Amino acid sequence: MKRFLKVEDIGNLDAALKEAAEVKKTPFAWQNLGKNKTAILIFFNSSLRTRLSTQKAAQNLGMNAIVLNVGTDSWQLETEMGVVMDGNKSEHLREAIPVIGSYADIIGVRSFAKFESREFDYQETILNQFIEYSGCPVISLESATRHPCQAFADLITIEEYKKVKRPKVVLTWAPHPKALPQAVPNSFAEWMKVADVDFVITCPEGYQLAPEFMKGAHYEPDQKKALEGADFVYAKNWSSYEHYGQILSKDMSWTVDAEHMSWTNNAKFMHCLPVRRNMIVTDEVIDSPNSIVIPEAANRVVSAQVVIKRMLESL
Ligand code: SN0
Image (cartoon, rainbow, N blue to C red; front, side, top):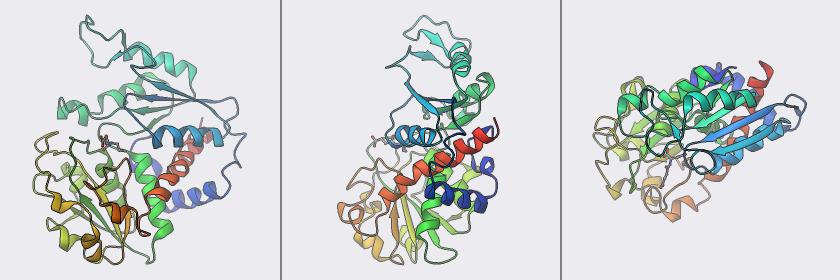
């Protein structure tokens, strides 16, 4: 595996889930695979789970893992080509990437949407430069448009907790004080459309995801109807794609509370974290036995380890 950016990169999902179960059972069985190999994880944005779980996954495989926080640990990096570098950015990605590549065997990159231009974000300008200039396999640790390590962990979690062969999985928008990226819901939709689940997206008007992610998904604008009979409720805020990066609603009637959960089939509650309590979900729901946000986060190690393992196997 040379890159992990989207669902196609993992290939057959059943095979990936089987491998995930194996990795979860015996995480240290491949310690020799990563011996004398280095993973460098580059963060342009904050992280808790991604940083810790990816580092742990690499170490479980015997690798050295180095984390770099761009800007605070390193020089500020310029990401756009053709600019006169007379501001506060001391180094260009065009040099930084091949330098990092010369120290690494595998590179992970976190770089959120900047929300300055939809075109810049959706072209994955930063991630693509790492792919082109690093000479290494590249893992997206949440890019401008996708968060594949999260979606893979979500799929593993659903597989573990489902009670029926084809569960109903509902992605619901919920309110948030800030404009958040579409990466998490985009990837979740991309993976759920391929998985063996009955997948529904519900969000207020104007919050539909980009056409490529909505395509083939069942869209239900009425949140109550969408949640009826759900086996899994996946809550997430995102900003508008159409009115790019804007907050169109802070409607608190979309907050997932006990009443919302009562419309479901005793659904499990999921969220990628970090979560704003009593905005996205009430304390009552996230603290209930139906909340699986912690095992979901724990599975981030498993998804990252399957990906890094496959990359090491094809070095
Ligand atoms: C990120 C997002 O893409 O929505 C990362 C999720 C894995 N979330 C945030 O930036 C939340 C920030 C906040 O202040 O709540």
